[in-house]
Image (cartoon, helix red, strand yellow):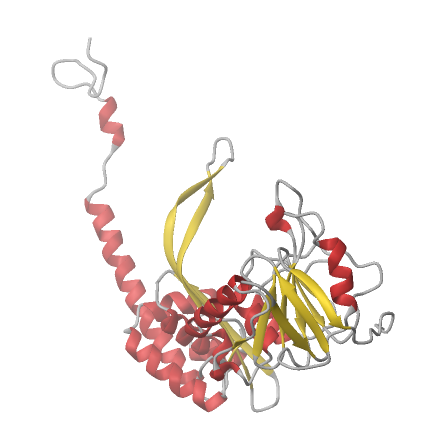
Amino acid sequence: MTLDPIWQPRNQQRVYRVLLEAHSFPGRVIDLPAELNAQPATLSVLATLLDNSTSFCDVDGLVSPEDQLRLEAPPAAAGGADFLLFQADLPPPEGFTPRLGDVYHPHEGATLVLGGRSITEGHARFELSGPGIESRQSLHLTGFDTAWFTRREPWVSAYPTGVDLILCDASHITAIPRTTAMRSLIEATSTEGGRA
Amino acid sequence: MTQANTELIEGSTDRSRWAAALLRVEESRVIALAEVLAERHRVRMKRVPKSGLAMMRLRESVQNQAFNLGEIPLSSAHVVFTGPDGTEHEGGCQIMRDHEALAVAIAVCDGVLAAAVRGAAEVAALVREGLAVARNDAAVRRGMRERSRVSFALMNQEDESGNAEGGADS
């Protein structure tokens, strides 16, 4: 009787190192450990970051009830959760604003985990700049509704408040902290309004 | 507790005491039995087992204010398996030990005994053994308490010189 690799402390420590590197170099695509590829990268990230002291909102119902129990994170409404998980090919829910924190508590800004098809190639191309990026960092995405990045602009406009994004595909992750500026190079179509 | 496992353990030992009884048995035997049972019943982890230190918080009895008594070693496990009839059974425990594997083993034994499935008799034997050790320990402690009993009533008796023992110096 063994635990699935993503729940084992040693692997979670390795994912944590990956997350540190991703946040240090925004837009850089980093491979998750190969042993974890049997599970969605989003779940590896959540298993590493969440515990019973962090609230969580699974808006699109992507996490099974069994895994929800193992995460131990108390559920919260989308507007008040510390961590939120979304299916990235759907646009943000109508009227949705994540928790942004305030000047005295910027750490209370939410972290959004977006799971899409690919973060290594795609027609949606972005150029990133800001702390952790020497000049420019390009990012190619498939299966990410561009409305996420349009809506992000006002959320991160009043630094230090804002949200941090973690983008995942099957086996890679990249981070876009609130300090990173994103410029769209080729606009892919948004399906805004397409969420059920 | 089901009829089957009531018969397996003498008297009506409450399920909440099974873990304490199993802790009295040599841990390698509990872990070895649990490994066999986990394999046999395809036991799965329902929660991620944990071990470490937990703060024990109590309330004092005068003003009912909470205070931290101190940290205790604690391990917890929660497992699940499907019985032969398709029913889902769960087992779990929290033990005052920093020993994750032992917590998982006791959780497996707890689930198997509660479900009264194949292997419950072996678990019941270990529980009985642990209860016997616990009874023996309790008897020894009782004897030690009796031997060290102090009658505070004597403190009020006057000694030969007429002074009350324990009285304030004048």
